[in-house]
Length: 389
Image (cartoon, rainbow, N blue to C red):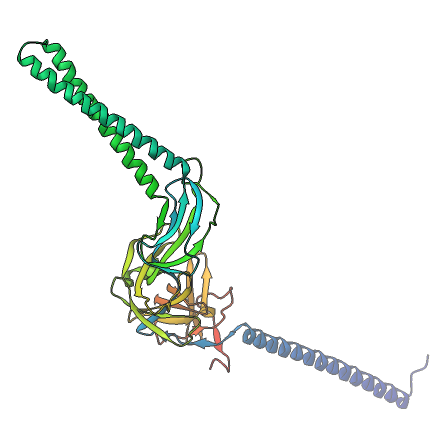
C-alpha cells in the first residue's frame, strides 16, 4: 500500500481529535449528571432527616395547677325520719271490733285507736275470778281451822302433828289464793289489751286492719301490724359521710339543708350526733341532725341535700384529670422543663370527677402536659404547640 498523502493524513488526524473531544465531553457530562444525582440524593436525605427529627419532637399543650379553695363544700344525700316512729301491734288475739283513726289522723298520747273483741279472754277471766272466789273460801276455812287447832294444842287436846298439819294446810290455801289473784290480774291485763292506745303523740301513717279482721298477737304465727305511728313534731335527718371526711363531722358542726321543692333556700342546722364508728361495708359514718318540725316543713321519708363545709389543707392543688397518667406504679404527671419532660409521681386526694386534688408531687409553678400519650417517657423532647404557648 502506498503511503497516504499529507493532506489525507492531516484529515484523519483532525477527525480523530474531534472524536476524542466528543468522547471527553460525553464523559464530563456523565460525571456532571452523576454528581448532580448524588447531590440531589444527599440533599433529599438531609431534608428527610431534618423533617424526621422535627416530627419526632412531641407537640404538647400545658396547664398550671390551681390552688384549692380554703374551704370545700361536701353535698350529701339525706333522709328525713320521724324522731319516734313505731308500728303498733296487738297484745291479745281476737277480732277487730272497731277502729277510731285513719291515716293522716293526728293523735295524742293515750288516745284510743281501736278495740279488739276477745271472747276467749273474757271467758278465761270469768273462770279465773270464780277460781279466785273458791281459793279465798278455802283459804278462810283453812285459816279458821288452823287457829282452832292451835288453841286446842294449848290444852293438849290434839297432837302437835295434827296442829302442824292444819297450819301447813292454811299456808297452802293462802298460796293458792295468791296464785288465783295473779291469774286474775294477768287476764285483766290481757283484757285491757283489747283496747289499743297511742303510745305517744303523732300522726297515723298506716292502717292495716278493718272491722272483723282476725287479730293475731304472735302466739300462733306472725304478728300483724295494726297501725303505724310517727311523731312528726320533731324529725331527725340522717346521712352518710365518707370515711376520708368523717373527721370533720362532729357534733355541733354547722350544716345547711336544701329541699328539692324549695330550690335556692338553705336551712341552717347543726350535727346532733354521730355513730362514732365507720360502717365496715360502706366505709361511711352515719350522722344525724335533729330539727323541730311543728310547722310540718319536713315530711318523714322525704329526701334532702345536706351541705357540709370542710376545711382544706393550705398546700392542696387542683389539676385536671386529663393531665394525670395512671400506670401500674401509680399516678404521675408530665412536667415540662425547657424542651424536655419529666414524669413525676403524685399523691391524689379527693376526686371531683373532671379534676383531682393533689396533696404532693407538684407545685403551683409547674407546667403539666395536657392529654399526655401513654408512650411518653422522662427526658423526652417536647415542643409547646401554639395553643399551649
